Image 1: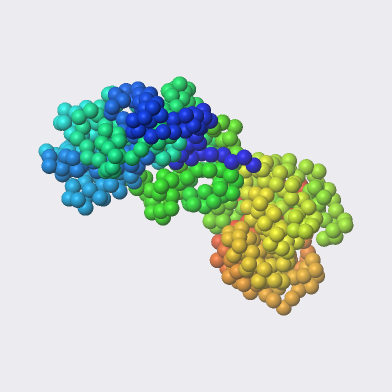
Image 2 (image 1 turned 60 degrees about the vertical axis):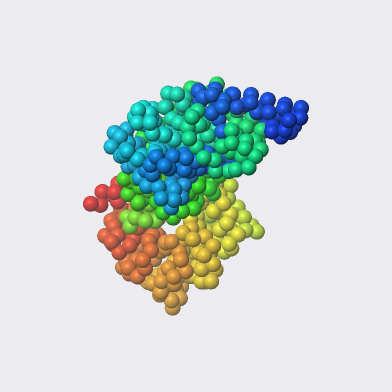
Length: 627
């Protein structure tokens, strides 16, 4: 399965044309541009040509471009270099609350040096208002730093309006444009900035290079000292191949910008509309207007982004919850917090950032994975009873065994995926599959068919049926199955069950067959001395996520589940209990709904649906209308 990359705000793949330019430059202009011999002069001339190309892209003079090792270094030079160069004029510095950590961490350094750092608040869109900046200015304000476009939510700031204010007050203005250069028009004259940061790897160029625009006459103290390169502002031999790659990346961006803006905006809006139309509780954090074309921040109510990211990762889908540089932090995003978003919603947030390689046909696959995961997580969290249709698979067909005899059967469908799709269309939220053919050397015989069912549904699928090895569990989960049901083996081998729960947390469901409250064997003809309630408690301690409980009444399968023992077991544990066995009509559903409060969260039925004795749509409507 090909991966889908939706994390272009973290970094972008280097464009093939850029790779070619880097290689050619490295081969031809390998000499030190500061050397006075012919090869050095040739490299120096090439550096000047590339500098001119880059300067032209942002409306600057070539002498105003200072090459750095990336955006973070450019931010450091701008903030610390400007503060130290102007410290005698004042000590007050303004930065927005949603800046990149490359700015915020340098502010901590300046605060330790005695500078007064003031944070500018933002509105619910993450935008700094020009009047907010105006009110915060003081006579000793020497520097203001506000990013052009936010890396997490995509909000574009009113830089030109703020720049006009600061120009009148003769206050230095720095803008971190790492996310905007190459994506939206950036002209330093129009923006009225004195300092501007650009990072190459955000625009399909190489990592480890970038530049700081420094308006002519802007006081700035160097951070790196040595050979005096870059007009004395940044010592160190220039990485000419990387700079050439950056110049070519900007040239490509210039020719594609308007087309890509339209395409990425379309992808962004299509994705949000598709996801919001597939599941409830999707909230947009990013503004719809004045936002980076490919950036979308959203939250899925009640679902941790950490859980969703694990599921997406397993399906080869690459995106993040927030900025890549802060992805390991347990704290909510400082950007979302500044926007007034509650911590709970911040922890439910995903950041999707589209790029040049993405296509609209990828969206259904991503939405399906998210939708399936959300359905599963919500089912596990909500103590609300649902109807779970079941499919018994044997030799690729949907069957009903006659009195439990593996050799006698009634075939209900030769196309189980089609049947499952019909049930999903009727409102089913979870599908239960029993694989009657077992496994050969750990690989289930119906694995390919089950994988097809999983791919064609947007609801989660759980599978059981004679599972006795971790290898078999691994095979099912690898096919995209949401949960694996361990039945007889769970009762016989508690250590195996515990090991499975440790290795696959949240993925293991245990099954208990009982008769009048005691664990049953041999198709309910005999019972053990072990009470089902005691076994259920042991299974809960092992770490199962739910228990499927089958206790038929003494008159057999035709008379439905034993309500008393089902209620007793559900009240004995603190995990969901799903009733199964003999559910053949609406009366059985009503009886189970009557004990729903005890913890019965589902009712599995297959035979009754096949035969027409139970209308699935009507049964689902009954559970949804229980109020």
